[in-house]
Amino acid sequence: MIIAAVNLFGQEKAGITGSVEWDSMRVNTRLSLDLASAGLRLPAGRTQAEALLASGFFDLIMPYLLSLQVDSSSTVADLIERGELNYYDIEDFALTAGSVAPSLSPDMRSITSSHSLRLDSFSSSLLRHYRASPVTRSLSSVTSAQYTGIIIIAAENLPVHGMRSTALPVPCMFPKIWDSEMNLIYDRSMFDYRSIPYFAPMVHYSSLPNIFQSNPSGLSDELKAIVGERPLRIFARGVFGIVPTDLIIDRSDALLIISSEENRRLLSQGKVVFILDESVLYSYF
Image (cartoon, rainbow, N blue to C red):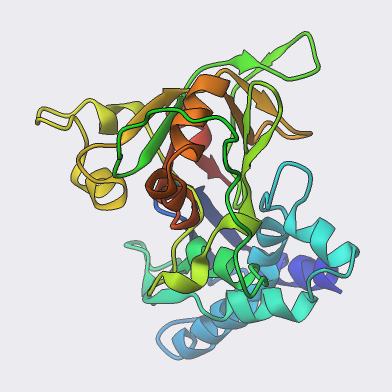
């Protein structure tokens, strides 16, 4: 049904371009309709053209929403196929798109509309646990400073666990953190999203320039709002997963986090930033 709708709309020379922006957690789109091929003339046909754009948005955006990476092994489409998510949940998400009023091209031959969807609100809707699982604790005592957040730097190709290859880490909605002994340090079940008064992802994404700013902390204002002035900075040692979304950190770095109740709380409160290569933070369609 989706494919048929897309093809029908495509016959009217309508198309969609857009981007998934993981640093801002948004999906931005731009729809365009060729007026002549749709048999429309201005000014009378403008209202119908705007209606066609509005009705076609869902069918055109759906393939890209279904392909969003949820975790290292699943896309949104996989969740629907396994019955973990309802197709109509994706419809409801698409309907939350903010939009800009359609506008005519300078040559008056086409009309376009822009839409923006918040991935952070969608990822929050996929969290179903009522109470967060406790973050892993260390059995041994390790002296650790109290940090205001956690930054894991993974902006280059890293060894893939269990394989003789490297890969550039990529973003998803629910990445995991493992230590070098493959103990699970952080996953979505440990994220206490109910304690956060606004939609927020369990992990934020950013790029290298934002941790090399000309100020005492070296952080951009956006990152300081997430991880504070004194974050723990860690270099990832590897990646894990069918899709390389999960980061592996050294056991000694993991102990700095899990040996302190205050530092464990940084995980449960989602005060975590992954620094990835800028090329993977944006995907275009």
